[in-house]
Image 1: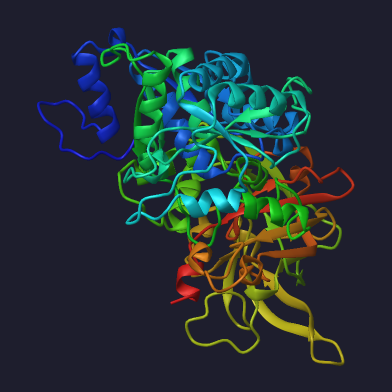
Image 2: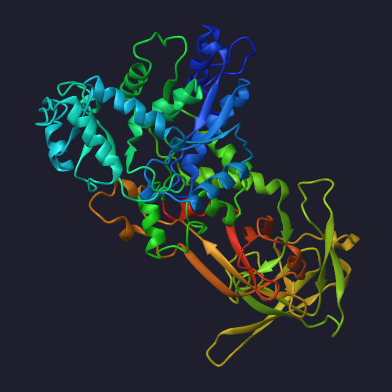
Length: 568
C-alpha cells in the first residue's frame, strides 16, 4: 500500500509504521479488535494531491484490515464553506476509486458539542473571555515563557454560562467574546494554555442555516467527533502532533475520566505530501482562482485533483506515485518529476497512439500521384497485444513538424534534410530534395520523393534509415488547438520563498496555446478524459472545452523529462 519502513521477514510483506501500530493494537484487542478510520476534509475548497495522500491512507488501511472508513466533513466555519466543495470532494474521492461507508458532518454533533461545552462551564473548566484575539495571543506567552491568566478566567460559572447563551442567540457581535477551556497557562505545550473552543460567526451554515451563532474550533470538535463515530485510528499529518495531547484531553473530559485505554480513538501522524514547483496551501490556491491567475480550480496547472483529472492524469498514476513516496514521520519535498514519471508509466500501457502536428510545415511528395489517397493501418497501442487498429489517410501533401526539417543540418541530424532518407511512420521511405521559401526567407514547403516499394510491411520496407517522422494528411487532417502545460511556479520550493509574494514566483511559461495544429480525423471520436499519445510528442487528453467544430487538447505530460535537462 505504501513505501515501507522495515524489512520483510518470514515471507510477509514489510509494513509501514502506521500499519505496524495498527497491528499492535489489533494484537492487544484494543477497540474490540476493529479498525475504523475517517477522512475529514473541510469543505472550503477543492481537494489537491496532498489530500489524496491522506485519504489513500485512510481508505487503504480500513480496506486492508477489513474495517470501515467514513467521510466526515469538518464544517465548523460556515463563512468559508459551501455545498459546491462538498460535491467536488465526493467526486474526487470516487474518481480515485474509493467508497466511504457513511457520510458524516461535524455539524451532526453541534448539539452534543454544545452540551459538552455547557458542562465544562458548569464544572468550572471553561469561561467566556471578552479580550481581543491579539490580547489572547499575547497572554499565551512563548514556549520558554509561561502565559498569563485572562482577567476573565475566574468569572463566575453562571455568568459565563449566561454569556455563552447570548453568544449563540445573536446578541453578541462577532469577535466580542470567545469561550476558552480553563486548563493550564503554564503548560509547556502552548495548546493547553486555555485554548479557544468556541467563537461567534454570524453567517448561515450550509446545512444548519441560522440555528447556531457559535461554532466549535477544530481542536474541540475533531476528537469528540472521532469518539462519537467510533473511530479507532485518527490518521493526520505531522503538524497535528503537538495537538495530540489536547485531542486526548478533551476525549477524557468528554467521558468524565472513565478508563478509555482499550476503547478510544488514537491519533497517529504522518508526513504531508509536498511537491516541487507547487503550492499546497488552500489559501494560496484560492487566491490564484479568485484573482484570475489560473482558469479555475480545475485549471490543468493546479495540483487539485480536478485539475490533474482535466489535464489527463489517471487515478492509477496518482496512487502509484503516493505508494512510491510512502508514509514517514519526516517532512520531505518530493520531486514533481516522480509524479510525471508515474503518469508516463501508466499512460504508456493504455493510451491510444495517434498522429498530431503542432508546428506544421507542408511536405510535398513530388512523385506521388495527384489525387491519390491510401488508407494505412495504425495500431492503437503497441503495448497491448490485443490492441485494435485504425486507418489514417496518406496523400501527396502532408503536414510534418517544422522542427523535423533542417536545410543545413549537422552530421548527426537524422531527420529531414536535403539528400537524406527518412521513414514516414506507417508509410514510406522518402528522400528530401529541396524546400520553398517566401521573400523573407521563411520555409513554406519541403519537397521529397518516395519509394513505392518501401511501404510498411513490404519486403523493401526493411531497408534501414535512421529517422522516422510522424505526419498527417493536409487534405484529411482536422485543425485543433493544443494547450501545453508546464510547472505553475518557476522556483523549486515556492513555499520557502518567505521574502517574496508567491504571485511573483508564477511561471510565465506555464501555459502555451497553439492554435495552428493538425490531428488525425480519428480524434473526432475521443472525449474528455480519454488518453492519447501524440507520437513523438507526449500524452494528451481532449479538454472539456473541445467540440466537434473546435478540438482542444491538453498535454498531460511529455514523453520524456525535458525539464531536468533544461534546468541543470
